[in-house]
Amino acid sequence: MTDKILKLREVITENLRIQRHSDSVTYVDTDSLIFDLRAKQNHAVFARRGCGKTLLMFKSAEQASDETRTIYLNCEDFKRHSFPDVLLEILESVFFELQQNCTGWFGKKKRLRQIVQEVISDISSIKERPDETSKQITIEENRKNSHTTSASASAKHSGLNLGIKADKSSAASIRVEQAFQEHQSKLKELDKNLPGYKRKIREFFEISSKVKFVFIQIDDLYHLDRVHQAFVIDYVHRLCKDLPLFFKIATLRHASTLYVDRDGQPFGAQERHDFQPVSIDYDFGDFEKTRRRNLAILEGFGKIAKMSTKEISELFKGQGFSRLVMAGGGVPRDVMSLFLEILPSVSQGDGKIGKDDVRISSRSNFERRIEELKQDSQDQEQEGLLKGIYLIREFCLERKTNIFNISEELLKRNDQVRGLIYRLLDYRIIHNCGSALTHKSQEGTFQAFSIDIGCYAHLRKLEGRFNEIDVSTPQAKERMRSAPILTLEWLTKKQEAVPEEDLEDHLLSD
Image 1 (tube, rainbow, N blue to C red):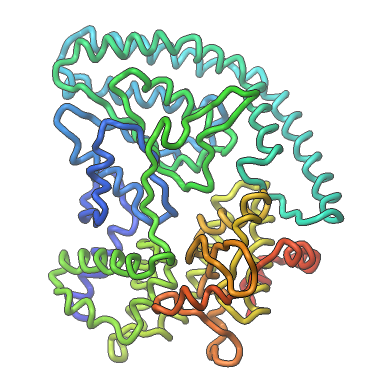
Image 2 (image 1 turned 120 degrees about the vertical axis):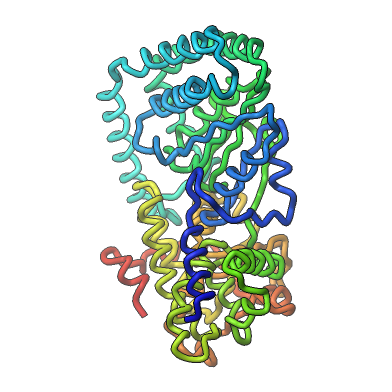
């Protein structure tokens, strides 16, 4: 490999995962998203992992006005904390950050430090209290788990049961109720103290002469237990309300619960009422836009490595780059990671990446996504997700296609199907190809999805064995209208055939 290509590899490797305060490349902002996030407004950034949520947060903070400061919190740091201690940790982190920056942000006025310290001391005293309900929590969890087990056994005889629930399910509501009951004492204390916290914060800003606004960035919210997310956001939202504080959340849309209803009482923050959504997810619904965005990112890396756009394009042959974007699901981190993996294997030949080179590496990429799902998904849903992947993969192999349709009506009314599809979208096992599509053989509207290329990478020659719809072609949308429809009846019938043991091995077998 040439020195330029070696430098390109180094630049991409260093920027695959963005760290705070690290020198990073410019965010490719094709939709003025940095400008949006700089606004004095609450926001939630939604995208799959690897789409650049964290980078967008950092870049918007860097470009904030002189009178605005940003506090960054990553929920991965709190994911093993019990609730409501996770909320206490977040609150404490906010005020610690203010305290540590009092001099730099607000001058050396003694009262500023006193105000912050008073709040920190109060939060610390609540946090240090023993968890008197730990035994009760264990009992409730065991009772819930045993109920789930018995429900699962009976569901096998009544319909589809993968153990996956979406936000609107009754089981989710029950669990929210339990969480509230279990931690009511600490939550009551925090609720009682909230007006006092807000008075101190208001006094803090009245004294401050340099900074007039603070953005609270909460990254990777999905790492928190889903049943606790709405409570955390509810408190942060109430803390910010009527103060010069604004929250900026970044998370996976379908792995997050930002708003729940408890006995008619709303908890959390409601989209478009309490915050504005920002989507930075580019999928196969507009493949050309997704391809251009990924190419712009690669060319940006190339510019740092002193490579021209022509030199970047010469690293590919035929449909090599489009196939790379397909294999990466349109997700920039996955696309760039695959690029790094493939590049050494072609350097001994013509040095150009083609379709076959991508196909070979897409299998290992699929395996990594399965491993990521196992690490990130909550225990109670992991088995159901793996079963769902097996069923969808079998459906596509049986019908010899990479595209399948699901009725939008089914997605609306069935919690398990909706939960399965949306979670697999988040984990990039399947990819969105279009919505509100009409089908040539059935009435109604449908959403189209593609399975990951890695699911059928073992089919070296597709002709006669697999009818792949190339989502990069102009004819793709029309062909999707004839793609097979995945029905609830098929899933219910076939769930009995899912292997009980070594399911992951079956998923990764040829």
